[in-house]
Length: 241
Image 1 (tube, one colour):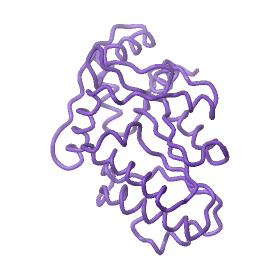
Image 2 (image 1 turned 60 degrees about the horizontal axis):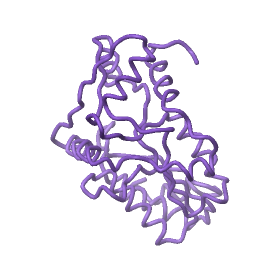
Image 3 (image 1 turned 135 degrees about the horizontal axis):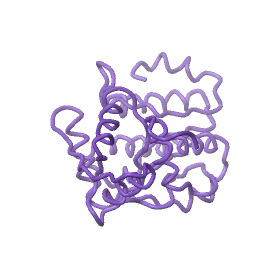
Image 4 (image 1 turned 90 degrees about the vertical axis):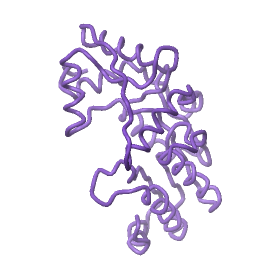
């Protein structure tokens, strides 16, 4: 995405483009916010030159309200650029993913649950939206062809937001044993500054989806219990559906 010439071949003949690319999490050496900003602009330009009829951006819930969170704001800037370029687009704005991550972070979650605790991001009374990645994928697939979605920025979420204590209570019910809340703290340095800013934004109570349009376009709003169940199954802590 940082090599515009390579993108010309990538989008040639495509009727639609979907991007979920990010660099801010620094999963690989050399990853950075350049992908989220410059890379996405390059992709928009390539899609426009190729005459792509639908561009689906995986954005972030409330990104336009979070100028102090760099990776949130980068999504907002890409949304703005899509509008400026006149490319037919759909921006999907999901809440926090409930998923079973691989590697060290997944192991940390498993160890925490084995010790009877789960990480939450907000105190009592401040709720945020969660969603299963499978529901996000379903919405992306439908957004490629849904004519009513063109030009829209659509929140994606579950049936209700949860505070940290409510999240811990939900996990307790699903596992059938007490789980206490451990507040997640953002560190400092590099991408950790970005994550710390995100955690501060969560405390504002603005990270809550309005799912009405989601329901109209993509069908019934999923229950947050199902998202949590999928996460726990992915961690090997629950059996199938």
